[in-house]
Length: 190
Image 1: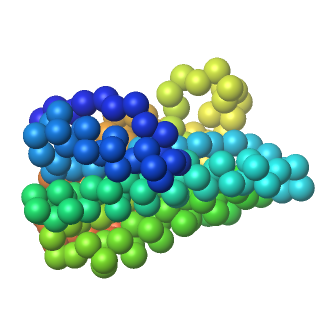
Image 2 (image 1 turned 90 degrees about the vertical axis):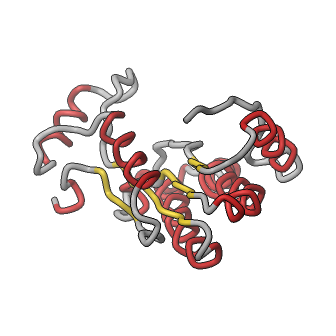
């Protein structure tokens, strides 16, 4: 299995089809689409600008929709798979992330609706990570410790945890579709 990198603004409906054609041409085929582009921002509700909200939806939902639409014919031919990267924020509301949470909830619904629309040839599933510690400097160790303490598995997730969930959906039985898998160490239970 290999991939290629193609520069494309996923928010631009005119850019996605040629970008998709270029990727398929370079790959020779398309069996798996992982919609992993995402935006994240912390803002109090009253401080979210219309532009910030629109941008959040453009990246988190519109991009996945445009790519799914552009890839559907090739994926149908190959009986392929689509994996969207959602979020725990699409399941649980966070007051300081309203635009992020609603965009990820929309992505979760896009997963389920497109799973029905593209069946039986294409499976569509979603991985919804919880707190993932990637060593980012903008998340203080106090916040990470707080979430690790709240998580039943007593740790935050890793990029490897998310990658394993993506790998599961990439290789699982094709009878599994329309599912949203929380990869959060049980944080949704807290």
